Image 1 (tube, helix red, strand yellow):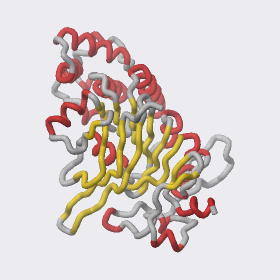
Image 2 (cartoon, rainbow, N blue to C red):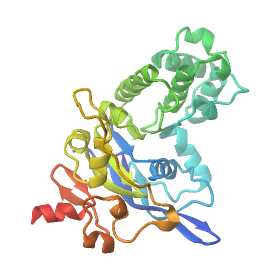
Image 3 (tube, helix red, strand yellow):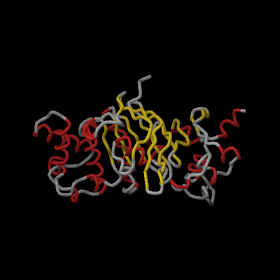
Image 4 (tube, rainbow, N blue to C red):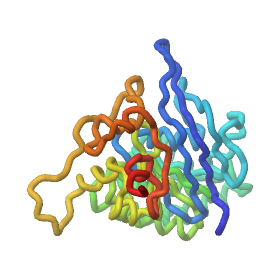
Length: 324
């Protein structure tokens, strides 16, 4: 067994406000091994993007890491000064964001942005950086890369801009890629191309990937393991095939039941009644208990930790009941 590339241990993120401190992430723990793709899934507001932002050191103030540890190749990075973290971001951790237009500077050519990133993190000349930038554009499927390298972001389509963002993320050969909903703004056919590209490039470059998404189809197609988040906590984590086909947590069961299948003749999809709780109104016990169809008295009083549930681990008292 290889040692994990990324280790997140009991991560806690808080937002101080005038009315008190809001707890956004609590006790988040997971590992990602070299070459592995871990999917992080859940409804809007579950804490997916916040987890990614905490890992790459881009939490929006007043958000802060209030507890736990984040280790990259055994080195703790959550307590590093801004300048040290900035050197790690890009060189050892690459980031792909949801909207490529917000990741690219509209005033600079694609080539300038790529070569500046490469020269910031790698000891290469301007000519070598330009050649590397052209190779990255070719790898990511940009046609006529030698000509298009001198064009501006507005001259590229949405799918092509996302390919450029992937090239930027891979520019300094990072060990970890944090991809925050990289296909959300794209149409379905382009989504499939981008996912296929991301899988191939990460395999070729040996990078580990944390893929944040709300799309279970993307998770099923791309990931080795998946972590299901609910109200800032891990509800279930395990191999993607097990979580999709044999979920143990009622929330995961609901997520899977809401996905249509080609061979299903149901007229209505399953749904999870209610909504994700606000940060200032997270219920006692299991945060999912007001929406759960299998809720017990214990669920309203005690918050379950992650328990072994066969091939997965789920934060649900039903797992303990099943053992008995």
